[in-house]
Structure formats: C-alpha cells, structure tokens
Length: 171
Image 1: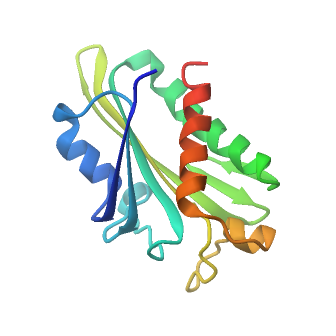
Image 2 (image 1 turned 180 degrees about the vertical axis):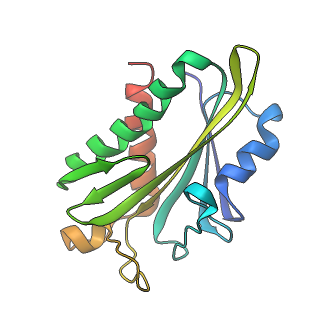
C-alpha cells in the first residue's frame, strides 16, 4: 500500500497543513509535527501540547465516497484504541471524538472534510496523542507516560502507530 509520511519541527496545525496542500499531496499522506502553534479540537477549541512530547498527526484521504466517511473515522478511532490497549492501557471512546483512560483524556480526534457532488474531495483526520507530557495546566488529561510510568521514544512510537493504522486500513 502506498503512503507518504511528512514530518516537521513546527506547524500551526497538521490538519490545516493538509487542507491547504491537499491538491498536491497523495491519498494516505500522514503529516506529523513535533510542535503545533495553533492546534485545534472540535468547535475550534484549542489543543495545547508540550513540544516534542506527544504525537501530533493528521492523515489525508482523497476522493472518499460520502457513504465511507464514517468508516474512515472509525478506522482511526479503533486503530488508536487498539494501539493504546496493546500498550497496556484500558481506554474508552467518548463520542464524538475523544479517547479516555478512566476519567482523563489521552487523545483527541478532529475530522475535517471538503465535499463535492457524491464524494469528499478530501477527508483530513487529525489526532493528538498524549505520550510523554506530564503536566496539563488545569486540564482533565493524562498521557501514556503518566499511566504506565515509562517514557516512550516518540519517533519509534509514531512509526509503530502508522504501521498499525496501515495494517487495518480498509479492513
């Protein structure tokens, strides 16, 4: 399966990047940054994340039939849930777009689309996964590090996550 991974030190938002450049990019382009200056959640809420401590990523899907968008959202949701469960975390999905460990948020998902006629020109699904961050300034959040008491090599973990997602794509 053909895919692309683009990595940047800093971006305003991985979703914004893919929406801006979607026409020049291929289907299944993953973009990752080590720091987002204008990360967003649902309803234009801010997604704040400490630089170099988390996985901040979006994936571009192109020419998606209208009837398949929910399937793609569930692909990312279920992929993240099983990835975290394999890391030893008991997670739950809280609709419409959050993953929790017990009562604390560990991951947020944001889906944005552009449609025409009977298909989406693009579907961009972004996610922020709290990995090594330990302080969340008044937020009800947690991270893999806080939950497992271990620090993770972000680059390796990201590579494993992409491979996991690709292994379940289209399933």
